[in-house]
Amino acid sequence: MFNFFRDLFSTELAIDLGTANTLIYVKNKGICLREPSVVAINNQTKEPQAVGAEAKQMLGRAPGSIEAIRPMKDGVIANFDVTEKMIRHFFGKVQSRKMLFGFKVVIAVPSGITQVERRAVRDSALGAGAREVFLVEEPMAAAIGVDLPIEEPTGNMIIDIGGGTTEVAIISMSGIVYSKSVRVAGDEMDEAIVNYVKRKYNLLIGERTAEEVKIEIGSAYPMEKRMTKEVKGRDLVAGIPKTLVISDEEVREALTETFSTIVESVKIALERTPPELAADIVDKGVVVAGGGSLIKGLEILLREATGLPITLAEDPLSAVATGAGKLLGNPKLLKKVTF
Image 1 (cartoon, rainbow, N blue to C red):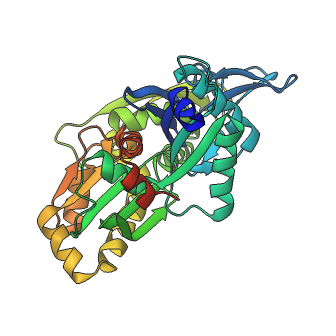
Image 2 (image 1 turned 135 degrees about the vertical axis):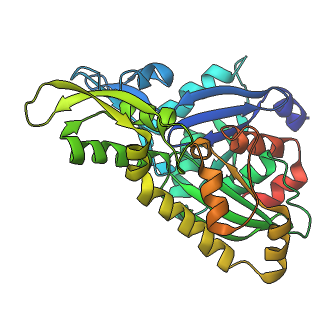
């Protein structure tokens, strides 16, 4: 009887706790929250001043009394207390009523996560009010989210390029046969653009400006049409604000090393794939998901590097959250793929 009432008054959630963005999927409702993983903390009271989109606007612009923090780094928790406050805030936004018995939550985590990092994620969710916490590896969640036949005895390859990590995995029969997680993804791309502009033009630009450059004119392969963007920053020689125009060729040059690391991790995964599963991948190709997959020409670069068919997920930004959410309605699969 207790279990009946507990289930009646509790909610089931799935979270893609990303370095750049946090997505929350509510059972029977779909994705109900999509916010940047940023918290603005008041340095005097140590309480959150703003969370999510509002806090992101403060990055690099807040006064000394307020610090805008990104508590997730490389896909894992860098600041435990701030992460717990962020999760609690997001939970509060998606709950339509006060939960009497807490809630069940599935959280997607990088495949290369350590035991200590797993415990930190689990403790953060429990501290924020969760009753039960299940962890699923991001590539597995992404594969479920893009409807790959993961339960069949065939090889499925997925590449998930997020904000903090790039996950490459071969999946068969509801298990990960091989996975490689490299902490090179969207954040490193932004950092590479900042360093390139600093090195070449003696101009210091902010993280948000670098992200805008990456999104608007970033590309992994030469484009038919040349693109440029005006960027503003501080001249490191004169010490005054300055504006310059940067081209897509320069951005591509800045991102060369990042793309090389991603391509190398894909090649290593293919080399370590059992022959039978490799044959399946040749026929079915590779699916690419995550925000980083939206970089122009990335599928062409991967196709040339591997010789395999490359497919971009229909909704790459939501793949992990959708996959974790689908597990809420499939208890049998949830038991198989979570820990």
